[in-house]
Length: 543
Image 1 (cartoon, rainbow, N blue to C red):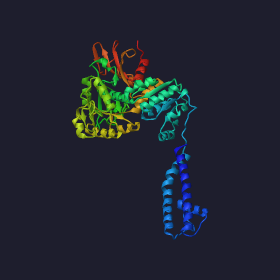
Image 2: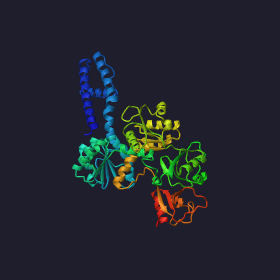
Image 3: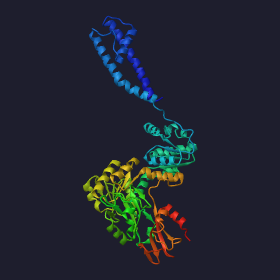
């Protein structure tokens, strides 16, 4: 029996007792004190009128002091009962009586993914699975959360693990089980699922990295620590040494390099298309993309608009890039030296620092509390602390704070102090990602995004959630391109690839005048994403 039903029955019993007691006392009082005997039914009518506060009819006055005091007490008792006690017991009963009942089993589901305990870490996963046509069934032990999910159209089962809710999800016919609760609850869920005979994949999202192996021993086929994955993703965004924007460029040594330049807020380039800005006329430098709102727009098209605060990705040699920036007013090159400032020394912040340090980068951590690796104790909202941490001389700021509100305000403060420094932010709730970009962050990653990518990759065998566009430099021959100019034939428009350099003998050429032509024996370096490189190879088969 539901708790509200039990309380309602208790209320009904208490009401009967109150009515009988009041009727009996009134009956005795009227006979012995007032000298006006009443029948039981008349006394019961008085008790009901007093308790319900509807009045007494003909009973309007009493003469004996004890009787008057009794009536006054009965009146206050009635008011208290009707306006304080009754709503507490009655309203929950009525709500449960008439509200939509939550499903407690899903026996018809097949080939579905069962998710035990909803949370931000699985939000993106559910969206991606739905888009792929894979059904999900969410088991939630919290009634309020279950009702919220049910109202949003999700398939939800409300129930408790100890009451056999796993079996009610038709787990035997599911393709996988995702456990997303506390580590001890996850372990109990895994063991229960195996005891029910489920032989499919069980993937566990683990809070403590030391619990990964115990989860495997409990029966999980995979165990992940989303906070560590998020830390790795933030480090990859921050440093080219961890994850270069353009793969393969390192094979060209120092002859060719990737640089990034921010379009300043007062730049004359803002709003112009790539063609209108005539950036391609700066010989020796290729614009291969633009970071806007955390997305790499690549390959660039002549109609791509240059955005305020956008970051251009350039390929060229050091001399040509310097010349490009001197000629392009309002484009400022981002630093490639100095430490990375990490705000937040928790689990995510420490993981970011570890990965950056391992690849040879310098880091500086500030946190409100002292702890392992914390270089300065202070608040990221304190301008004096930021200056003390050397904000003006850092490569980038990584906000690994635990509260999104603090991250938002920190972004605004830092963007005001150093307009050009890249800001990479951790986000807890996916709905705050757009707010972070509006505040001035260059990259914002949510734990839902990175954990969703991991799980979808495991469940569907493909990366359906792309964190960014991966560019690569590929060396190809001149097959099919002999006697043509790098700009001729609209290679970028047709294939999505840009010719960034030509190797001729021992020389690496990056400047192509009007008379330049590919020669037999040249090696061409093209830059594009995987689809672009594939199109290029189809259009110009390599011999």
